[in-house]
Image (tube, rainbow, N blue to C red; front, top):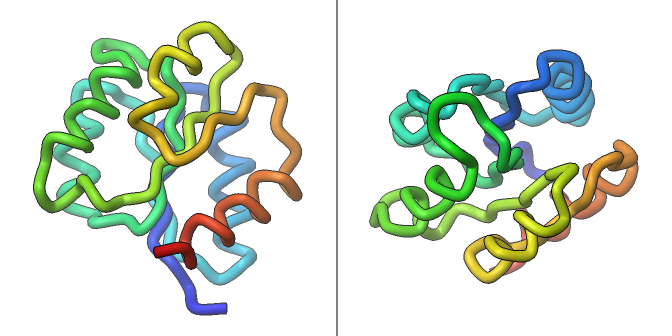
Length: 121
């Protein structure tokens, strides 16, 4: 498998750290973003292949981050997996994302889904 660049946008340090460690152990390059206000700029700087995105972020919501990703020419092609404990909010943004996962999420499910999305056209 070709290593990918994965951005984890998650305000929960414990969960984000677990995701980051799992992706790193799989050989991917990872950045962990905890602040919604700086997320879009950090994503532009990092240029990920895949983003896992929590919708309830501090300062700027994940939905606003997702809209900014899709509106940016450089970021629009990025695969986005919404990972949220709020299924209602997730459904409202699902049309802009590539996949929606409702927390709690198993690492096996997340890794498998990320692999499928990273290699899909």
